[in-house]
Length: 252
Length: 241
Image (cartoon, rainbow over the protein chains, first blue to last red):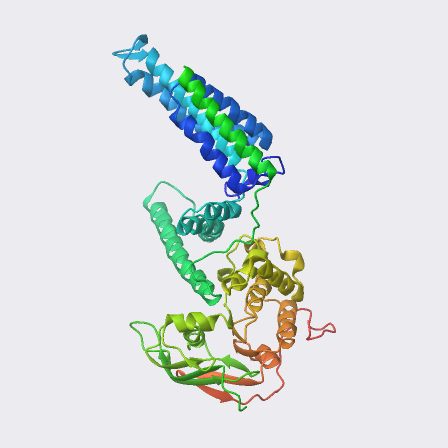
């Protein structure tokens, strides 16, 4: 099932061997200075550090590049609109609009920050399998309801996708071919409506089944989370990296 | 037959809003070690009865006593459920965890076992059912028969005192059915099972009830010959597999 698998969480790299909680804490330490960075130098340092981290996680290059392309589709829009709307020294004119140097610098800063944050998330969070992510977030003290939502959403996306495909297949088997007409829209609307109703019913049955096994609103994780020396080293390094970025930002 | 009933239902009236109740004054008692089968046409209220016993449906009238205690509300049911093993009709609804092991450990964890004990209990149960190789598999990628066996493991791991089975063999092939019969007959547990298949019920239960007009009546089990169809039935075959 394309799009719903989590291939990045499968590896056995140094990063994958870190405790998921340490990876999440490391991400917080790293992403705060990146998000708050006001200078190009800080952002550039962040990008380099994130790229190093990603190299340690050893994800499949093709996949990362494809995802990077998707992210930078958004930053491309920044390069169009920010320099045209920011005041400052004009590099060139597009009719009545000026493309400014200051705007371009801001777009560059945003691009660097976006990519740095994206690479760090890819290295640290995408490397955690969703069930583990739920347990780790719960262990870090996030609201349990949010963690349940995450876990159940991940678990049932597959089921709902499969149900949707089954309905679609049965529609096709009866000669349905999507076109731009009322019949097609109505069919899709019914299909989605049915999917919603079925998901609702299923949620109720699953909840009843959970109650029958003594569910009292709390999930217990079987996974044994344990901090080790590597995690302490990693968090120390993340702290240093964070401090370095802040210092570089101050010096600028 | 002198032991106090594990499950006792008196004058149960139950149904769904806007319709006539499907259960109209139903009585039932299941004693320790008793194995009762329940048959009846579609929509006669078999599942409704099981859901009412589990406290998943609110009856309009009647009394439900579980393990000698009259059920007064959700709290009583929540406690009683920890001692009842309910196998749902669709295993798909019962399995929700990322791995089979997590799913089998879910009940024991809710019963208050430590993580280590729950994991051990889950592994033992999977072993008992011959499913040890499935521990790390993903439940929704298993076949229907495998899912049913895992669902059975999830409730057996809770060491229930009664098994309540809702159509345990629907959609299963003969081999899986035979395996479930063998497993259930190897357990020393009271069973209340609902099925469309009297043949299957007679293999795992000692008494048969039919649900008609919203009440139960005991049916006489009288074996008699039937003509039936087999694929390649002209070849020598066995009815055990």
